[in-house]
Image (cartoon, rainbow, N blue to C red; front, side, top):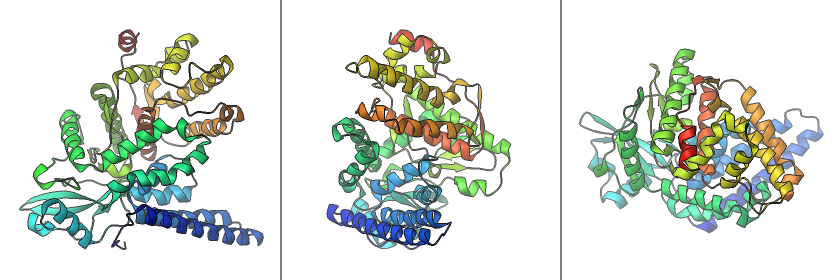
Amino acid sequence: MKEQDKIPVSKVKRAAKLVTTGAKIGGNYVKYYAKKAVGNEDAKKELDEDNAEDIYSSLSELKGSALKMAQLMSMDKGMMPAAFSEKFAQAQYSAPPLSYPLVVKTFRENFGKSPSELFDTFSKSACNAASIGQVHKATIGDKTFAVKVQYPGVADAVRSDLKLVKPIALKMMGVKEHEIKQYIEEVEHKLLEETDYELELKQSIEAGKACEKLPGVFFPTYYPDLSGKRILTMDWLYGMHMKEFLATNPSQEVKNSIGQKLWNFYDFQLNELKAIHADPHPGNFLFRPDGTMGVIDFGCIKHIPDRFYSKYFRLMDERLLHGSDDELMELFIELEFIMESDTAEVKAMFFDVFKNLMRLLTMPFRAEEFYFGGDEYYNKVHAYGTEVSQRKDLKKSGSARGSKHLVYINRTYLGLYAILNELNATIKTTVSFDFEEQKRKYA
């Protein structure tokens, strides 16, 4: 893969890159209409592939939060045409890497030394490259390390990148800026955290220690003396990323075993730690033939406030979703799905929408065992999402709905569901949440 010698850093240069990409997309549509006019049956597929290539190429050059957004979109099965999902999925671990001189520059800025002065060996080419940084393999004696090097300028560009994409997001969602202010602030806050490798070092050590007793789940040891604001050094964990792992044609028994460990990992974090690894894309897990797995990248940790935890996860209770509407209405208001200021008509409308949505999203939690493979469950979720998004009465009501904490909670579980779907896994999904205790605690 061709290495990148520089990254556009200034707001003007990053905006200009997106404008150039827009012009390319316009040209793709001209070609599409010409092909369509002569009866080319593959015209739409070729348009998607051309647009996906041009957009991904542009975001790859920008890196940082711009490329991170592509990564997030690729995790949501059915959100976009297959050509986009497949292309954007490369942002998880195979984006175009930076050239070695830029890596050396980052080392000198952090340590006043080059990689060769700190390590016995250091791979000049990146082993993996994602949205925020890239990984190099290094050794000291017989010890092997993974060294994550952050791309220059990505931390400084987070706010300006969000300003660039905000108008697009507002148009897509059909809302006004003040209506999604809290969600934009939540995303900005988390993206800034992901560029702080000193924070990630602290979170990684804490998470590894807290989860070390989970059977079959492994975490690297981290090295503060070899880490800095833009560099993070850890043990090299052996294992395969999802695509490579599935190419070995593992048995369903092994895939179920890994899927169960993933589920248990998130269940433990949710219910015991109230803090979850909120970046569950395949690039952050290393799978092994014996059914065990390694977990890396704790740059994005979502801490769950007690009161939100108590209210939101009570929605997993079958009795509540099929019981008293008054109690459910009270929860929906607490979670900001419904506003006290809404008219009775609007309250009733959103009550039905969110009751049906929560029944769908919590299905895996409400079964002793759940099959995540195939398309049946996902088709139901996306069909309902499409139906809701096209309802004019909902659009007229204005304002985005739901607590800001839902941004990363939902992202986490949709990402987890997508990985389990790829594994075609059947999972024992017994929930650790104590419904009655939480109800008493926050009654």
